Length: 192
Image 1 (cartoon, rainbow, N blue to C red):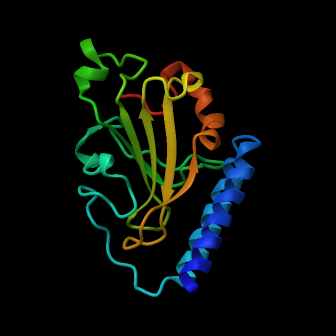
Image 2 (image 1 turned 90 degrees about the vertical axis):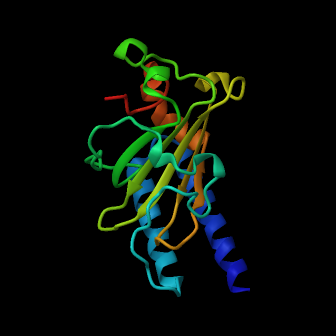
């Protein structure tokens, strides 16, 4: 019964967050709601928080196709700090792609659009936390969404290193922000 209530509350929180974000790129509201959800989940977590685990194997709650993403090509040379004034992916971030440098930057300069089959993973360590608390994934699939260069978007969060990731946003919730970088194929972080 307790699990059903927790699942229902999680679903309601996801619906609420999605509704708020559909109106615009409500970065500040998303940050506050995610923090509130993390606080609520922390209050109901019975197991102690464990130290950070390496993100090499499939993390609990994430799809198998992103297992070992930290071994992929890293787009940013240095960790990306939180954006001032609100950041929907609040935290210190790294961005990876499942392609080689030659695939996306032949002749040394990144080419757009990304090739079909590309998967971009953004991880974020939340402020004051020592584990990955957010994973945002973009998958390029030919024909899936021509209006958004055939990208599928999905975002997962968790509030403890031993917790499963759960979906918090997808597709339409993400398009408003990512449309600002349509000219570089909807991906904010370019290869450095």
